[in-house]
Image 1 (tube, helix red, strand yellow):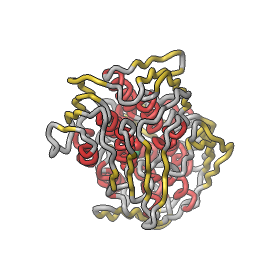
Image 2 (cartoon, rainbow, N blue to C red):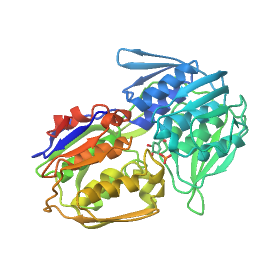
Image 3 (cartoon, rainbow, N blue to C red):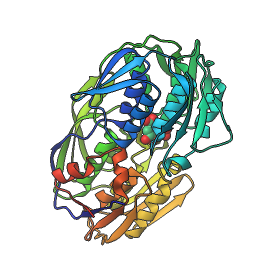
Length: 442
Ligand code: S3P
């Protein structure tokens, strides 16, 4: 079991590029496999989660190869996967496992999907329930956890699904099944979750629309059997990975950094909006668009923060960033209130629990309820002793968040079982140390 130690840093500075976006990388591979022809993918995130999806697609018969720095996916067209007895090991990847279930639901394929200890505890009934309505058959529909055996149908039924939670994984899984349906597939979600699937499908030629309903929920409608064009896809840098160096530079005195080519899709940048409201000095420049996704360079510098209440409507757009926000909130003057965050309990670990335990270990009080958390910030001058050991709980974002905390503690913060960082940000240590952090393997 590998661990890392994070030591106090005097300042962070420099211009960096963080790896490609995880969500868009999964989608480029999966949607690429449905195109008729060759899709070239530039800047694919080569992390364990994405490689699990890549290997699963290869197992299902998709040819994928790397040519210099470009990944090439030789798509079979929509609904053309077939075969049975496949075993797909999705490791730690919730996105990979759930999206692949959608892909399989729309194909003549039978497969058993498994994952690591963390993924095997995460709820799957949220995907099973809607996919069964499209005609997919599950060995044991009451089984909420991986391993799960699923048999898809070549022509799934069109579905209108009203999702109780705003979840891009649920939405994307249903849309992927709906691609091979002869009719329209509709997903309604209470607030909009990340829309990378919709943007990529539209870019490749699908007819897909998003409308706001009178009750403020959102309706996404996809016409089945589109002809997807074999266009090149360039993956922007991941705003969820950029969040670590950005927050680190905001809380570490005398810091100033810039991160290039980051995806600034409005449904991903809730953390940045919240930090700006807290008083953080963050700016966006060089805005442009690549294959339907807005990107920009993001600059940040050391800032004095104040606590705020995060609007519930913003939660979905920063769903992966609460662990690193909780570290920023330690340095804020006053309380930071996070409500409507129950979904955090179903991530790689129960993040509400992991965040509050970690904060408590360095003397920060939190008030926790089933779906909320309040952090009592101690301001910029409070001396945090450190000298603590945090378990990653097989959660990459918990591991990286507490390593960032170590930049401002008097003594090291040690994080156990840091291999999990490879699921989203394999170069985390190198990139952070490049801007002046003091991270070491133990
Ligand atoms: C993801 C969706 C999010 C996020 C996950 C990646 C995706 O989950 O937490 O890390 O790529 O679809 P939900 O929107 O399903 O909560």
